[in-house]
Image (cartoon, rainbow, N blue to C red; front, side, top):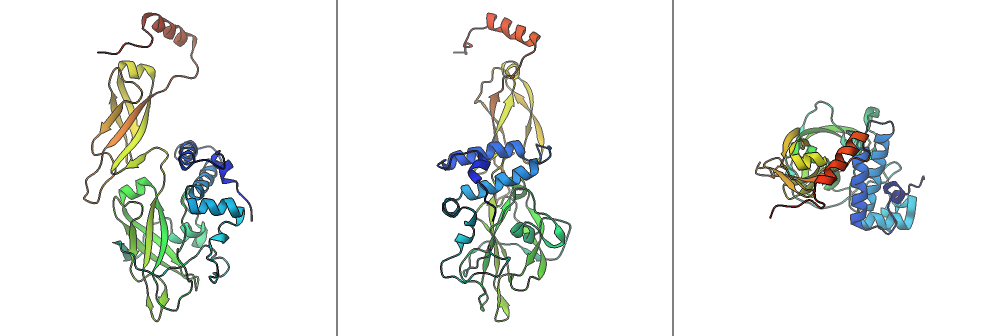
Length: 324
């Protein structure tokens, strides 16, 4: 089994705090996100970064990774529990009946990432999973129960997917037979981490009946936005002259890119508020989007720029005077 140094992938020390790990992930995810970085190998690097963060952000997984190294996943098996058949090492089962959204429709439709792909990396027909997505399949205890049982699986979603909601086609592979079944799942608009989407009658078969399957929603960290309640927070980089003179700047939201007004005399840390451009709630109302201004100074200057900055330094006080 090949060992991956997740700490090296994120560029953090082995005793790094949870905040340090999150900061490192956001910085690297922003750099290598496929929507931003089109260089060859960027997508693979982004997936590797997401994999490392998925393990190190979770105290239990991180502890097992630190102790067992490459064999940490195998160490998740409960002592004394009978193991799954080859090829299903990450499947674990659970009895129980959590509540949640009722989200199952039979049917088929246009292409979405399949549930089977999310669990195993590749699905039927050789289709590949979405970059950065990761799922821990089937959490719980005793496998292969003869009685019908409820199962649970993690469903990772981006902020964009959760905010948009809608239908997703999934293909589920039965652990016992390997046969696949296709369903359409309704993802509620504005769904949050920890909420469950219930697929009635799609759990373990036993005694001629089936339990339910619960998809546990896991919102993935976003390289650009931070969610607090229903409000989204982001950073808007502006130039020194935009800060001094004011002007317009392009600000991405979850759905579109907007042109916003930068007030004259803005300093780093000033916030611009866009009402109703945040994350949707269960009642349909949206939170707000807050963009914190960050003044970015050019790393290199042309001769003319240098002269102009020199002239400015001679006529302007340092630091600049602020209005009383």
